[in-house]
Amino acid sequence: MIDALILGFDRALRTVSGAAASVRPNPAAARPEATLTETERQHAAGLMRVNHTGEICAQALYHAQSLTARDPATRRSLASAAAEEEEHLAWTQQRLAELRSRPSLINPLWYAGSFAIGLAAGVTGDRTNLGFVFETERQVEEHLTGHLERLPPGDARSRAIVAAMRDDEARHGANARDAGGIELPLPVRLVMRAAARVMTATAYYL
Image 1 (cartoon, rainbow, N blue to C red):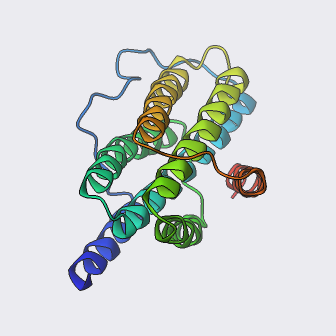
Image 2 (cartoon, helix red, strand yellow):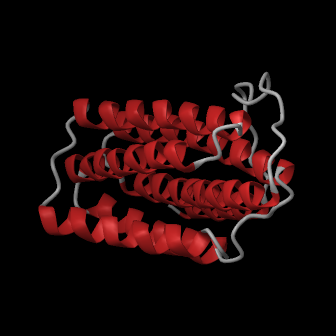
């Protein structure tokens, strides 16, 4: 457990410091850079900052849930999803730089809070743990669909990244459900939605 906590602390430092890397090519690689107005650039940057913060939260959640998972197969599934989420983190970080913007200033706080939530989900048992993944990814998929509608139509690079992320999130959620994840109670789902709204509203600006 001590070794796991040390590794978890190292992951946290790498996550919030911007050391994420991607094995897969960036989905935006073949897309040309659009000529955006200053308003469009700032709006796209705000949305991509929200997505970057969401991936910070995803890393924290998956790492915490892996620590508390009982079944080795569940831990492997969470670790595999976390690896792809790290790729999303790298993609959104690169896009923010291209848009001449920055990550959220309070990402360390979001990481800490999400890690605590992940621990709480994990200690309730693997089926609830997986159910939390399923519900989280379902809400993230909806959120990314909304961003595809709100991004500037000409911003093909941001749109390619968000579309690829949405496909991955849908698969992560389906895998968690198929592995035995249970439907969370309605009050829990509503609290998760409320927390997500606070995060998105804050990260867009900060």
